[in-house]
Image: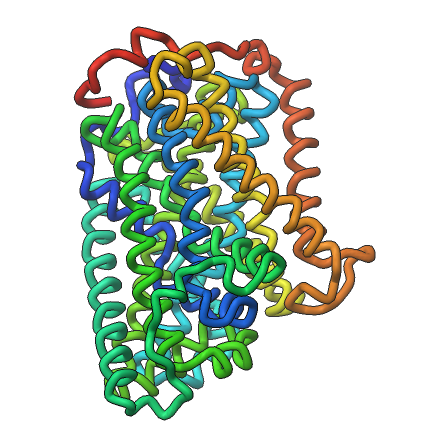
Length: 500
């Protein structure tokens, strides 16, 4: 599609055909940070639902798959690196589109520092430098340096980023498979040292623990799948851009499902529900302890799995935020300098460094408040994630509304499926707000203005976004002249084209 170019760089665009389907798939997988995500939520989910944790992870997959379908079909008719921002603008107007773009950008800002912190911590643990992990100055310094290095890789080029990601995902999956195999072997051999239990098909029943527990588990489960859409944010740089990025997003969710179920079953079987529930507050460091219990002197294997997972995700999480900012800038929804593309590397250098800079500032400032405040900011992510995913699902049905009755496939995969996914995520969003309103449910257990810190953080981010949107609307009204439309029937029915 044709887009407005940044005025001072009329002949420079993102590099077409820089990566292929496999590269996009790998980037989508790494953006979710599988090992880190598992380490962060397995304990809390087990504390809520016990042995049914694998079932809850399977249930959490359903809305993700339905929204991935929306990303696939919207990308077929609009290959724009701004994804949700561009699609929602075209389907529902500039106000909703701007807020969707703001939500995506802020998720990157909130999570990049935490991912880099975990990457540094687990790398230090893997090489025996446990004392450095406890030294806040050293750990935070290394975290900032890691963010700078990974941001540099994003700017230098998409091909280099893809090559690095390919290595990291291979290491991560290999390490996880070794852990799963050894853990299950020791369960059946009776050598765990825990109250282990042999796996059962009944563990896949998400309703086994009851409705209230399922709701809480789903809120955590949705978080571990978040990030797969990074593959679609690279649509303008991917071969077969109308189809490959969307397929990469869909397949990412399926591969993640298999990975998550395998590791969840192995962890629950090996350690038992009592140990995991008692240590739920330890978050990802449960994996650090289980690594030694399962693998003995080879515990560095699992520690490096979490480290490589977080390193990879530190890089890939910058991609959606930076490219969304680029897309917003070239549509004049943000200042034009955010749309600058490096003539040498053909990547959005200005927006990428801005995202990294704000993320570093957020990480350092929040850490000065308390470590719990950083965790509370991550909890606030669920609000932003549910919002822009649900918005995308609705936009898909709205944009394709004149084509939904043309076939059963269109009705189910383009209309009903995305709307159901959006409905489930909206329900989870409401449940998250209710849960976060109670300060007792936050990491710190403190009250900010009578509410839980995560909800306050989410509200502040939303209000800041609205204020910035109104200010920019008053300063430059060009973007707000756009009007909602419908999917072009020629594009809907046209064969998938090659190239961007």
